[in-house]
Length: 172
Image 1 (spheres, rainbow, N blue to C red):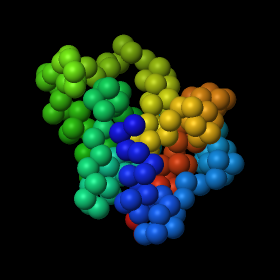
Image 2: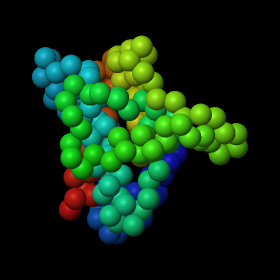
Image 3: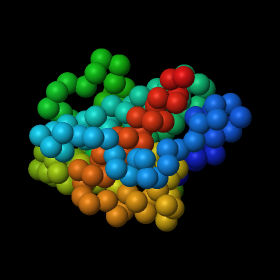
Image 4: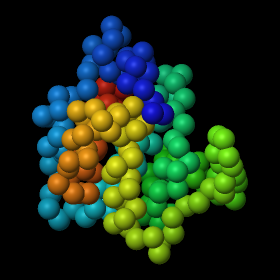
């Protein structure tokens, strides 16, 4: 994982003596945030990216750098339905990687998915990988709940709830 649960505990976000915060109970966030039926998957995907960006900025402000994997940044939409917020940094991070080689053992070209990839497919991939930034392993209770979600919309909703809760703890 990029950011282990222990890292969040040490930062005072989850558990530990600094904040006393814990991951919300599985029952609480498994239902996700209440998203009105008319909200499209693309809107939920964009909201999740904003939450991920906020997490990265908040942790950096606490002195904890959180690198977003290049494979995940490659899923960042080039043109969301609405512009990214003014402080949104992940767009610049993805743009900075374009044309460069990335990787630890072997290097390959950084690739951002294009419009031909399909917005739903892109959101679906994000809905599976976004929990890795929080150190949630797929074989854990939380990871299993993500895998067993009813669909992309439900998975995004669960992740929005989780990221929102973590970001709220960081802002205290």
